[in-house]
Image 1 (cartoon, helix red, strand yellow):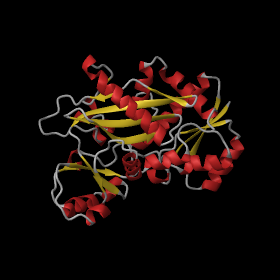
Image 2 (spheres, one colour):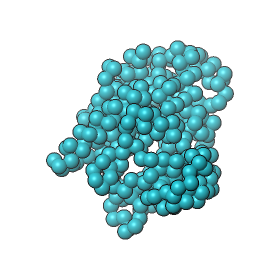
Image 3 (cartoon, helix red, strand yellow):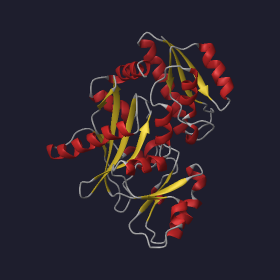
Image 4 (cartoon, helix red, strand yellow):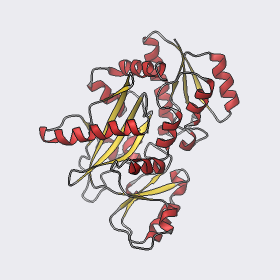
Length: 329
């Protein structure tokens, strides 16, 4: 097939989390060539007319959609599948609705609650304006639209009883969080990632991974912050390994996580591939933190590590994703 790889418009001096999108594009281009496909790459910009013209000229049989940001923001990611839907061109990964609903963590929270899927309590600056009673517990302040742990560090977790004080902190951090923030109850416990891969209208849950926090100092938050993902010089980067080995005593918990991941796939209408991130509290209760439609496909990313555990390998996983894209409704 002729496969067009649609990726972010990334400047040469971009930070590592943005440059990683180009790493994915190159690795996938190589894998597609091994599978016998012809590939071209195209950056996605907000000049939609120009992008549309380039796509039409390429005449692809399939678009491999790697767009994570548009115009420098995650809130416009859905424009890529929306444009492809309008052109009637087959593409990989999540559809327009699923991409939009999972890109907004606040909208995701509302949908999770509506379907009674456990997710930590949360507040926006607006809802805190309406609250007069004190808060309890600790909170982590996150970006509504940005992924890759953008703007998250140890200071993102705080214990504040005053709604006004928490709102003030959220507003103060807007610049580093992409302009829109929310606060989520911090779940102190274990962290899991479950990757999902479509299979002809069904979905396979790949082997679950747990993130271990090794040699963290007492009192240091056990979170996968920006440093853990991107700063190769940091302690966090080298001390947050993922683990796929579990004792028999975890079998019940892992079954519960897999069931919740499947439920999320169905509720959000996900297709192609996805990842669901969980925290499990000290009592063993799982909580869905967020859903990642079209998660990172770099060779060293968590999704591909899970695919390796099944024997698929990188090329095999890409082949499955392509098959799902071609066969989408």
